[in-house]
Structures are given as C-alpha cells and as structure tokens.
Length: 284
Image 1 (cartoon, helix red, strand yellow):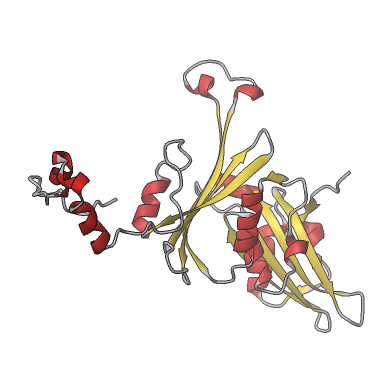
Image 2 (cartoon, one colour):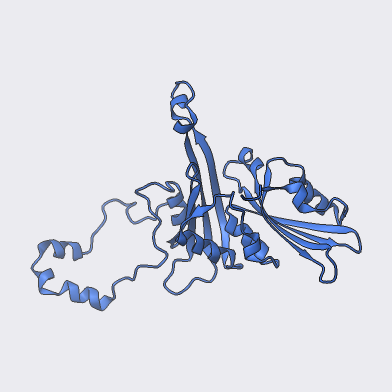
C-alpha cells in the first residue's frame, strides 16, 4: 500500500518561520492555501549536526491551472531554504509543463533526482523510451531553452455537445496531452536545433508516453503543434536527413537507367514556377 499524496501545507514546513522578504511570503501564499495543489515528491535535507530541516525540494501539481489561461503549465518545482538561526525562510519556484522539467529546475539547485521522482499515484506507468527521455531532460541543465508549451486537460462529452443528454463516465473522451517547443542550445552535429517534446496521456489507463521530434526552426515546430497527436502527423526524427552530395546526384543523373527514363529526365530538369508565390516561404 502506498502513502497518499502529501498536502502542500504539510510539505512546506514553514509554519514557525517568518518569510525573509515580502516576495517570499507572496510566493508561499500562491501554494500554501490552495486545496487543489498536491505534492508529488519531496526531498528534505537537514543540518549535518542537528535533525533540523534546512532545504526542501518539492514537485507539485497545481490543479488551479485548469481554470487559468488555457494551456497553462500545471507542474511546479519549489525550493524552500530555511535560516534556522534567524527564524526565516526563502521560497522560490518554477512552473513547468511536465514533471521532468520541474525536476530539472530542482536538480540544478541541489536536489537528488531519485528523491524528487513522483509517487506511484501520479501516472505510474510509461514505457522505457519515455523514462529515458525524462531522465535526459531532468539532467539536461540549461541545454534546452523552452520557447512555449501547451497543456490540454479537456474532458469531452460528444453526446451532450451535440444536444443529447450527458453521457456516462465511460463514454467521455479525455484529451490530456502537452506539447513543448524547445531550442537545443548545444545541438549535436547532424541534429535539428529545435525540438518538440510531446506527452500523451491515456487518462483511463493511467499511463502516458513522452516523445521527441526535431525541427529546423520554431516555425516548423509550431506548424506541427497545430495537429499535435494526429495519427497522420508523427513527430519527425531528431537527426537531419543527409542531403545527397553533388557527385552522387550527378552520378545518378548520368546513369544508364536515368538516361533511359524520360520521366527521370523531366524530374531532373529545373522548373520555372508560374505561380509568383510558389517560391515564397510559408508563414503562420
């Protein structure tokens, strides 16, 4: 039997301390008094010479974001620092679209990744590629700059939306997914510099997958997100497809097979567009 998710007011453990600044108190207030916030993981560190707490690292889910701006980030990493001698605390946080990015922020501040891994109650099942990608993101430091993200947590009732009576729970459609557009600030040779990370949640099965795709620029990545998750819209590979060298292209063009094929000769000939917009780049 697993332990229930912790309540945020129990996990922060700052009741007997004063906020170091008004901003620390304001940040505490964003989380401490909300009933829709659950602590998914927490790591506490103590003074080496006493059992008193010094730092706490939390991964939380903020259910209030469901009612905020559509697509808002629903996860957050929280770092609490306590000055026991002064009787004060500092509190910083970073909102994130997926758990791995909240972990990334905490790890960069001294947290242990294993200890800030969510409890089993939080979407416990994913496949090995998802786990490997999560581990890589959580430990990537500042490699990826997050340009944008969108989280969908819609519960759809097809029958009711078309004028019929409300459907039973088993007939509801759960559209739970998140896309993230990120720029790789240190891309490997032969890799696209822009990535889309896509988390697809099967709410009823309590499982999810996380995948990665590569794009030449943010415009192409945004274009993909317009139909994110559609069966005929798979994520493209991260690796850049190698263009044929001029020598190999010339060899193919002069090969006996190419010379014998009228269709190949037509395909190899340069085209002159009749549409003046044909060579213009597409815009969003």
